[in-house]
Length: 257
Figure 1 (cartoon, one colour):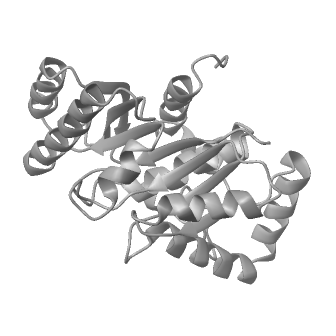
Figure 2 (cartoon, rainbow, N blue to C red):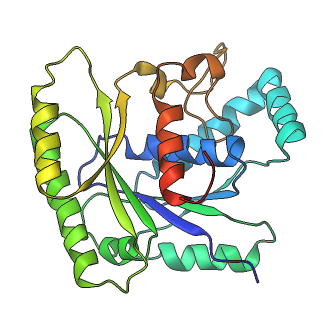
Figure 3 (spheres, one colour):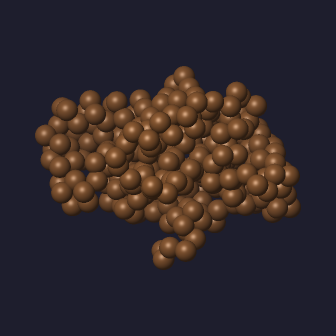
């Protein structure tokens, strides 16, 4: 019997923090670069952003012989087919994954979940506490930060009160940081995070348009895709490679990075 894969969720009460994009980028790194077998569960009903990106990727792939050739060469090099993207609600996420695992002959090491906003939304808390790890992107916005800290503190308190649940930890990370803006708010909230004894990653992801660059006709390079990892020339200065390795050190603490 195959061992249970790791369940890793990207979750925040607020939208617009880059949650779905980070699911795609982390999944791409672990599946296509780090050699882990990945499945993504898009629970962000009704928009299903990750599933929508997969549909756009496939559509653009069909129009481009160059991208088709890249996909073939990637498979020849890595032996990796595209990871599966499943759709569910937070309430049905567990059932959807278990059904997939029971029916699939492919090994699965990590299941990434793109969770909907709001810890009080139906099924979200139940889904989150059955994860192994939760990562919460935060941005330099007072309303987002207040909501995010409230969300993470509530989950952290729940972990403390229920040590028998699967969830091992919840980690904040700074996303879309504009380095031209004053660092005062960033520094203030880092101190608040420290005082609340919450976990925050060392990696800070900069605000850069490359994170939105998708596969398209005429695009030589791209960043956000469900079929490929980001193009190598765009990785420099993106912070993504550093973020992925820090996440890897948390979810695989015994692995050599």
